[in-house]
Image 1 (spheres, rainbow, N blue to C red):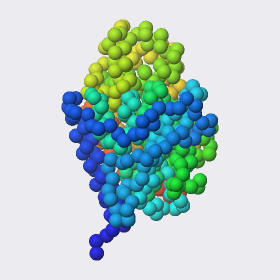
Image 2 (spheres, rainbow, N blue to C red; image 1 turned 135 degrees about the vertical axis):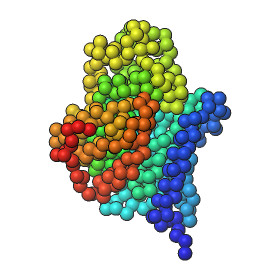
Image 3 (cartoon, rainbow, N blue to C red; image 1 turned 180 degrees about the vertical axis):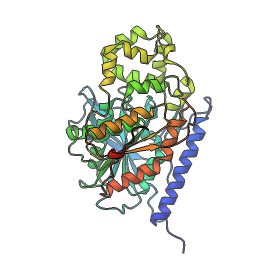
Image 4 (tube, rainbow, N blue to C red; image 1 turned 45 degrees about the horizontal axis):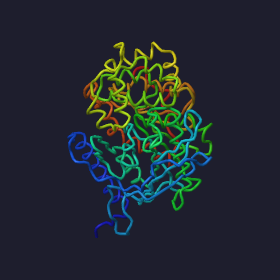
Length: 447
């Protein structure tokens, strides 16, 4: 007799097939032509992404919710669709300036059963780089994995990891971060405090959502790669002081931009040089004292690039700016890295973003491709060393791959997929209550 889709192996196979289709779709999107007709807009209630004038006092408090139709779902015999039922969220957080901020995201209640120890756990997913335009958010990517809004191309590539986590029976809550999706401010890209707070408050929001199967005793884990790895790493450091009510079982910290000064050098001149503009836009918004310095150095091309990037997603950011140099944006011909060195106020802002200065509050798995030149491997590995020195429970996992091309993003993106299964298995073990095996004592002297 054929197995029902309710059988766990069949359900996981169906979800794996769906995830594979996402990979193929993402590759197709990368080659989309700019004049391709835009898709129909997402099915979002009018004004959902517009924050109200007043926000709740409590961090993580829900502001509003609505059903979120998943673009890729499969029917099951029992009537519930795979991978589950999604809800669009808006919740309150506190930003790096101490002010309240509205953040959007999504919660997905999985169709698959949790067969591990204890009640169904929840995993907070911190997305990788999506861009800075409001249409780039990960919650919108769940509804429309490829979105063409005029000449802006967004790709919901995090859907792959999300579906794999749902296949394990874990609930998933995804944050859009501060300003990505909401219409009241720019996204504060790679801001350590904003990212860590948004991740932790996403868990609080998921817990307060009615009608879910997670409980106050549900274990919590964090998953993030690249920008998301920085956010989960920050959340692991901030949890004891910011969210002691959200105890963590484990955190996957993939390819984290832990030292932004070093990351600038890796990104400049690469396919992802547009990320420098997203960073600068966000830090100027959070630190208005930087505006006069930016005005001092940026030429007309630089100012135009920052304005354009403020509404761009990763697809068009790459298409328009790949392999340019930030020196083309300055009136002095200096790179942004050289400007950082020349301006103590800018250097202090970046120094304050350093991850690795506090012991993580949970077991962490730091994974980084040894050939990664975009978010340089050496600074990610140093984060693991710093956490080990601070007494952290650290699993350092260098991803051994050949050099797939400098500056092309391939050295950065390949480990995202090749290590993803191991990362999710490691997180699942933590959610089952299995202690992690730290390898701090055997961390090699060389990468």
